[in-house]
Image 1 (cartoon, rainbow, N blue to C red):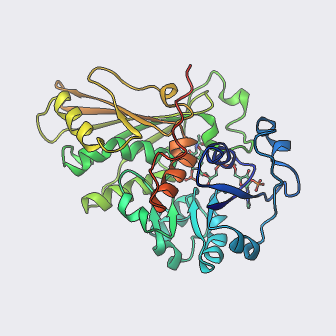
Image 2: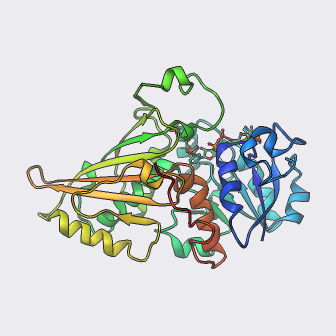
Image 3: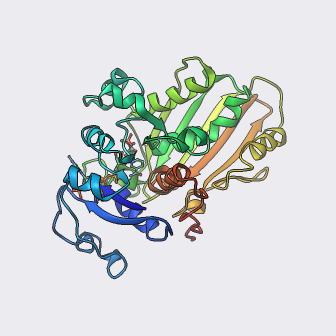
Amino acid sequence: MKAAIIGGTGYSSVELVRLLHQHPFVDVTTIISNSQAGSMLHETYPHVTCVVEQTLQSLDLNKLSQSVEIVFLATPSGVSKSIVPGLMENGVKCIDLSGDFRLRSAQSYEEWYKHTAADERYLAKATYGLSEIYEEQIKSATLIANPGCYPTATLLGLMPVIKNKLIDNKTIIIDAKSGVSGAGRSVSMGTHFAEVNENLKAYKIGAHQHIPEIEQTLQNETGQSQAITFTTHLVPMTRGIMCTMHANLSDVITTSDVLQLYNEFYQAHHFVRVRPEGTFPSTKEVLGSNFCDIGLHVDARTGRLTIISVIDNLVKGASGQAIQNLNLLNGWDVRTGLLEVPVYP
Ligand SMILES: NC(=O)C1=CN([C@@H]2O[C@H](COP(=O)(O)OP(=O)(O)OC[C@H]3O[C@@H](n4cnc5c(N)ncnc54)[C@H](OP(=O)(O)O)[C@@H]3O)[C@@H](O)[C@H]2O)C=CC1
Ligand SMILES: CC(=O)N[C@@H](CCC(=O)OP(=O)(O)O)C(=O)O
């Protein structure tokens, strides 16, 4: 299958290039770059020299529609909403890694992302691509809204207890931490070395654009709207997300019972690994891979459940999950092209 990537010199794009290089059924024939068209990808990223030798192209929607079957959009929010309709009208399926098609409500998108929302007709066509949870819907999608990195770790961590009504949803608190590649490649005041190195800081408190995405998905499952507490922190490392979640249990239950539930819930899902009792995942244990690792503990003294969920933000949090969704879309084994062993140490 011929594929294109838009947002060519961004981090998620080059991660798609890395992962798709090993995909037996996909050929990335076109990489579109807004800023570097005409140059070779290796001029921006010397690490791909002699492995992926491609000239970056400028965007020509008609040419693109005729030459590929699938387009990955790895552009900042606010960009894909103007590109996707033209591709879809020509029968090209799209997987959007940005937030442009994740929120069903245009009003909510405009409130949280501070951009004009996509056309509502296209918002209605989008399928939320949280692979493990919406497998069936993804299989027949034409436009996949790939989830945000934090929502992926958070929702995979919470879903078994949400679906089994084991926690009081009003009490959910999510303490989230990310490596700096989560902010993309462009330089900003908040993410340059001297600001981040040997530093730990909370950001976008009460204003993070992933809050409505998590709430929308929880509401989808429970039928009720419930606000969550979600706090993001920037950690001085390159890749990795850890979400530590707390909630009051609605019943008296042991750690071992909750773990059994998680093991059963994710039994058929290769990319979610549940840790044995008393052990908890760290970000390095999923580095470079499409795994989401989960550990949990019931505190009998407080009646609260703590869940720890880790992912690599650029793989399971972006490009890896996008490929997992492409696999679902095509009826291929979800693991195709994604059998990377995490890089350790
Ligand atoms: N980084 C992460 O961990 C995750 C990122 N995402 C989302 O994926 C998308 C891409 O993220 P990421 O790769 O980190 O971002 P980057 O900033 O690293 O890359 C985005 C790329 O898009 C292109 N671009 C920038 N501005 C425009 C524009 N106005 N019009 C067209 N193209 C433009 C640029 O490449 P060029 O000039 O070559 O076209 C740029 O390098 C974002 O929406 C992000 O929120 C989602 C989950 C995780
Ligand atoms: C570390 C860091 O800054 N991370 C980014 C995640 C960006 C992202 O994935 O946002 P959308 O996909 O919703 O655009 C952030 O917190 O905004």
